[in-house]
Length: 164
Image (cartoon, rainbow, N blue to C red):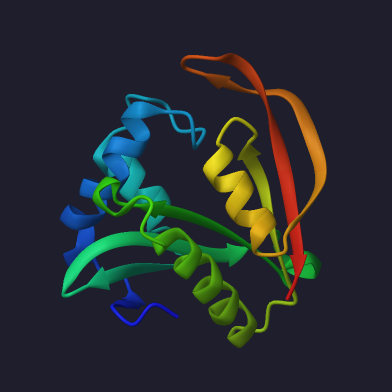
């Protein structure tokens, strides 16, 4: 684990820092399905929704990334975890995504999840595709023309899975 990163549960005091990380991702498109004009309030309602445990990752006291974990399905499917990850633009390429992916798996296991599944990884998001494959996730499905990429048009989404 990278010694300078630490994670903690996000609180409403983190909203400004979270929006600082999430807004550029939303406005650019290409990595999540959110509308490019999604509001701060709507995004925070989603990212901090009660069905999730949302974490912030800090380096030297500054929020540099965030991720959430939640059950992929309710009831009899709640043993499989789903997650979402966003790294601040300043930290791209510095190992934070990998650190969050590894740490999220530990947290998921500690919360009793048996596997992790990502339902909608946009195939053209090669950083994410490479990262999840390098962390041992398998592509178990492809949804053709699933995402209206703001620059590339219709692109597939991949479903990733890993037993924890």
